[in-house]
Image 1: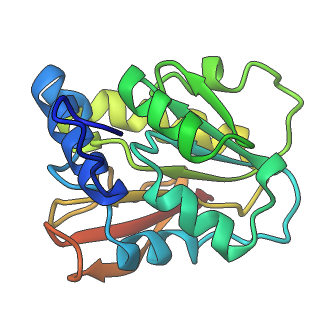
Image 2: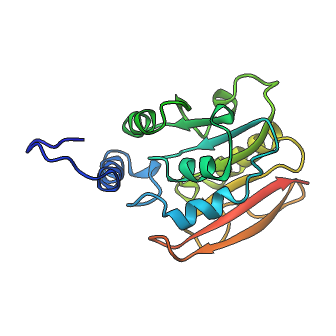
Length: 195
C-alpha cells in the first residue's frame, strides 16, 4: 500500500494501521490495537485438526494472522471460510488471500454465515471480541456454533479476559488451551465442544 507520499509500508505496519482504523471507526468490533501475534495464531490453529475434512470457519479474522497459521497448519484453502464484518479487513483479506472464500457479514450470526445447513463443519475459530457483547449474545453464538459443528469438534475462542467469555455448562465442555504471553496484550485460548 502506497501512502500519499508514495512510500510503500511493510505489510505488518499496514495491518497495524488497519486495526487502528477499525478501532476508531467501530471500537466494539475490534478486539485489540494490534493483529494477533504469530505465537497466538499458532496456539489457536493448533486446536484445529487439518485432516478432519469439512469446513473450518473463521469468525472475525481481522487482517489474517490466524488465517495464515491455519494454512500453515495444513488446512486446505478450499476448506477455509472467513466471515468478517469490517469492509476494510475484507479488502485486506481478499488481497492477502485471493484463493480463500471471504464473506462480508455479521460473524455473530452463524446461521447467516453458514446458510447451507448440510455443510459439514469441523472447526470454528473466533477472533470476535466477545467480551464486548452481552452474555446472552456470547452464549447464543456458542450454542448456535456448536449446533453446526460435528460432534466433538472445537469452537476455539481467543479472549483478553482472565475468565472464559462463557462458562462451562451442561450443554458444552470447556478447556483452556493456555494463555499466550507473547501477544500484546496477552490472550487466552478457550476451546468449547458439545457435551
